[in-house]
Amino acid sequence: MKMNAVATLNRADTGRPRKLSGAEKAAILFLCLGEEHGSELMKRLDEFDIHAITRAISGLGTIPQGQVEEVINEFLSSASSGSTVVGSMDMAEQMLRSFLPEGRVGEIMGEIQGPLMGRSIWEHFSALDPQVIAGYIKGEHDQTVAAILTKVKPDTAAKVLPLLGQDRMVEVTERMIAIDQVPRHAMAQIEETLSQEFLVSATRSTVTSSQQRMADLFNKLDATLFEELSHELDRRQPEAFGAIKAKMFTFEDLMRLDPGSLAKVMRTVDGQTLPLALRGAKKEVRDYFLAALPQRSRDMLIEEMNAMGPVRARDVQAAQAQLIDGALGLASEEAIRLPVDDEEDQLIE
Image (cartoon, rainbow, N blue to C red; front, side, top):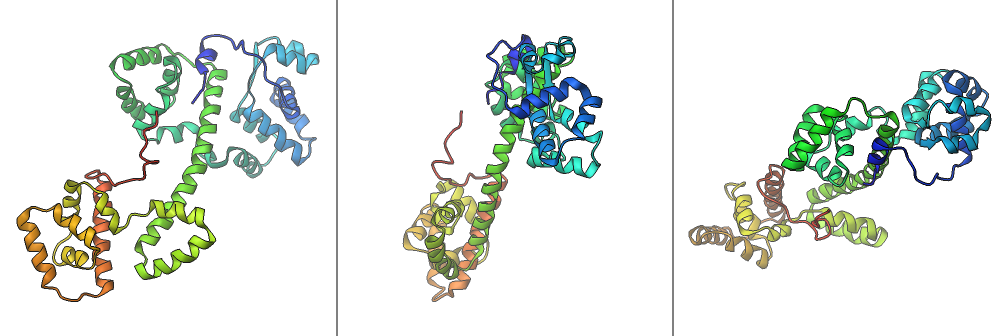
């Protein structure tokens, strides 16, 4: 995440002005005209132009005075009172509300904001796990971190601060105390960056959650039925189905647990569930389970399996499903850690 907001917080933007599109130049004009005159002018535009200019205002960010003068010299007197023009979601929405019905404003802003509609960026950010937030902001300047933590919910900020380390926690807290009000253009830049990050994250998480739902569904299917279905899906949608299979947790995956974790999983079931599940398992799976048990428990389990005789396949699948559910339950309680693919298990700096 590269906000570079500290530069905006501490000094004027001296970077090279970016090239503006036609819609962005029009947005500057509307912002210089102000809400009343800008709204009157926008009433005369068609639907396409309203969308284009609203989107441009929402993402405009900070425009230096020199560039404002180049775009609209005739409004130089209005622009010279400040060094910048700032466009934001709030400004765009406020302007639309002056001449459009409430429902139409919601539709236009919803199309621009996407998944963030109805909730502010700070509500979304505050809802994240504190560990995630700390990792997300750790590369930022202390002043930017302080600005961010003044906007998140107090209980969230209280959990994030200790995760920054003692020295940095003191430095950031001191800056938070000293911040009277973050300049609007600086906060707009931070919010724009966070919004873009969340939009990308939301898209990825939607795909991931959909794949996980299908993986959970396939885990519950009859093994024979799933095998038949797999053949067709491998042929028709190899890439998508491959991603789903990678998220599935099967009975055989229990072999990837360490012996201590596997022993905990075995203790989640009672009665004949464990011997029944192993009675119909592959030899290498059965041997791995047995190796995780003390000698006495191992001998007793082998004796129970031998006394069973033939077993129904559906009974075996039901017993194995109970062990999978037990593993998933322990993982949700963080009592064990489920095995994951190497790509998913990489540490992200």
